[in-house]
Length: 167
Image (cartoon, rainbow, N blue to C red; front, side, top):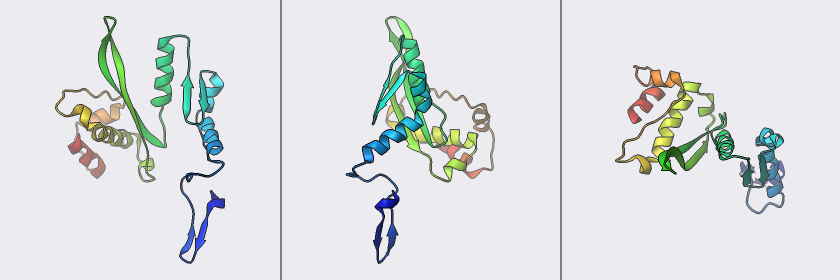
């Protein structure tokens, strides 16, 4: 990206993201994807070609496990979640996938503790997917026990207080 600087009388400007039309952008993106998913590729159940991720397995259960591993992985760079709905398939209750959402953490958010990050994520996901929840009864499953207890207690942390009100 340093080679794409623009120098003018107002200063030096540099792209923060890969601009459209640059010749090596696809190769750069491919390298980034391979770097991010290196472990999964080496395990032999994932293939990546630019922005296409192919996950394959022998059984449906294994496939679902791999999908969840990729899309619900703990990440220090962003927030992501899968929205599921209870369904009955072939007479058996299952959770059906509705959508996945993701966003990158801001610099200040990356410094939050685990409980604050989980709470931020919950509020963000509820706001982002509000059209699924408005007027409906729904359950939220949280694996962070610290967040469960902190949502029920009084706090002096301004972020947590604001998020408690939002929830």
